[in-house]
Image 1 (cartoon, rainbow, N blue to C red):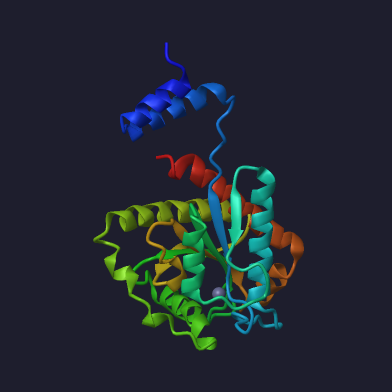
Image 2: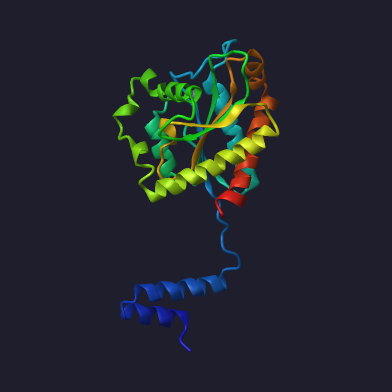
Length: 265
Ligand SMILES: [Zn+2]
């Protein structure tokens, strides 16, 4: 019987690249005790940063700090679990244009993209978290307003994202985008389910609109508005470290469920 080295030499001589790969992977599998476990790359995108504070709460809290704190905690919990490889689109208080956040996610080969925000809405008595996915047409007027405000982030720094190609118009035509869109909806449902049990949610807590930061064609993506800073009580809660940890824990549970139930289906 030929040994592995002889088989590889023979297959190489015969120009059988594929055969060579099969032999070597079979041989490696036999000698390797345990294959390395798949650890999905989770891209966490803390909204705003640097000269863009995001929305400013009624007591003066900056959205960018709340978003970073929660995203950073999610990254820490994911890392500690040993099951994921978290990547942050910004690791400090700097401005990152929206398309660059998407391209960072793609170059990190992200398996999931989560943008973290805290919103301000016109009605100060309304409060609660909500989850957004990408759609060409906003699900309602409030969602359209929220997306327009989030997309304006780049204008603050003089960067016009609208000069980028309008990728969203291809969604219904492209199979990858369609599959990504379905997975994104599955992710959003997990987020709503898990966050609902832990924090107050806005009515119609899963909405959709044309968010520039959710446009990676091949990475399931969602945007979490972790609360309304336009509501005094919720702003106070978002300033509270243990409340932010609760939100972060809810997000991590959603990611766990997503990989257990949605991504495998
Ligand atoms: Zn925001």
